[in-house]
Amino acid sequence: MAALMIQGCGSDVGKSTLVAGLCRLFTNRGLTVRPFKPQNMSNNAAVTIGGGEIGRAQALQAQACRTPATVHMNPVLLKPQSDIGAQVVVRGVVDSTLSARDFQGRKAALLGLTVESYQSLRHEADLVLVEGAGSPAETNLRANDIANMGFAHAADLPVALVGDIDRGHVIAALVGAHTVLDAADRDRIQGFLINKFRGDPSLFDAGRREITARTGWRDLGMAPWLAAARALPAEDAVVLERRAGAEGGRVKVVVPMLPRIANFDDLDPLRREPGVDLRFLPPGEAVPGDTDLIVLPGTKSTLADLAFVRQQGWDIDILAHARRGGRVLGLCGGFQMLGRRVADTEGIEGAPGAAPGLGLLDVETVMTGSKTLRPVEGQLVGGGAFAGYEIHLGVTTGPGLARPMLRHADGSPAGAVSPDGRVAGAYVHGLLDRAEARAALLRPFGVSSEGGDQAHHVDKMLDDLAAGLEQSLDIAAIERIAGL
Image (cartoon, rainbow, N blue to C red; front, side):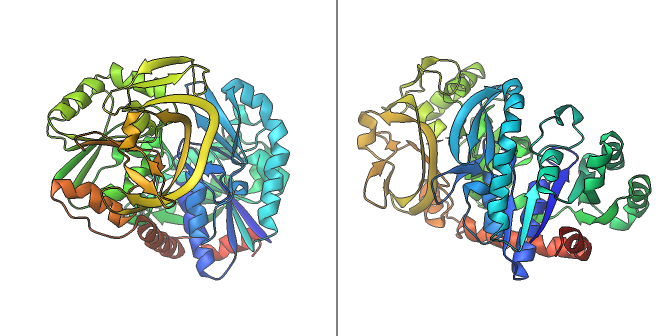
């Protein structure tokens, strides 16, 4: 069995995308490939076929391998719900909520569990591609590390280190990592990759030679800025300010950027619609007066983000928009915000408390310790098939549920719609992935959907990404390092 760990010089250098592209490349060559990430930190999560919860990036990488996602592909998932603490998900199930400091003390106990999950994948695959988290050069986090070099040593893995040239100082990033790593960690690194290059690649030939001369690491190639990579679901919310739909689209859709926004890839299908101008609204900006649809997205902490909505004055904008006859859609935590009240008296998602919702739907939500994790499919009440998943805390009740937004395949109703039909909400993530569902959403605006399911689009982008990496990276050297 072959394996390779992809680590990076920081977050958002493209590790997740590179692993997804390499997963598809080697899968297309007929190998059985599995993705793995020992520890992830993200509020973008997906539900596995067994009802567990893993990082969205590993679900995408599983799709690249053309295999169902399992909890072993990401055994430890941290879901931030405050500036200093996160919910800890272990093998798909909520384990605890810990401060960053307390989690440092817990990591040593989790290392063996991550290795066991890795070994379970190793026995079923020809190749396991492992993704690190953050950077191994964060030496202050090296003790008890389970995300980068600590895991690489425990599983005896060769490492390729990725530098992001788009953000600059890539020579310093790679050479600096070589400088600060201790000898044992440094020796794990068998080569380096440059990612996100724009322009004539020969212009950086001297830079690549300098990195090799200063580190002794093998040059494994330089990936260009690939359009396919930008079209894939993102994991880190840092990308949101760079995301927008078609300029000049007839339908303006605005999504407030909540501090604890979760599963924002729910909106990716709308970015592809030529008739839609999709905008993520940053803090400090008001909802534009010509907005057609406001989407309140998912959140890891509904009460905290509801308070942030009020701090920004977005509640006033949303209510004014609704009074003018504008449409509003709430997804998961956004659905909860649209109700009359949200209560978390036990402090499940943060500090205990309760607050009035926006009052646009006649429902209320009480947070409970039991988490709903399940794939779902069915029909929107107004027409259009959907398929997605639910991943949420809280039980929502109230008269508004008598006007459901959708029906599951078993006929059970879900979600709610306001009496005038202009405000709606549901717990389903991936609600707009199917072309039929998007067509139903856009129909009231007189705009047709371009068609095509999101899964098919992502699948094509994965093939395009794999082709781009095959042309730009030294795949033969990567195979040798991985042991193929």
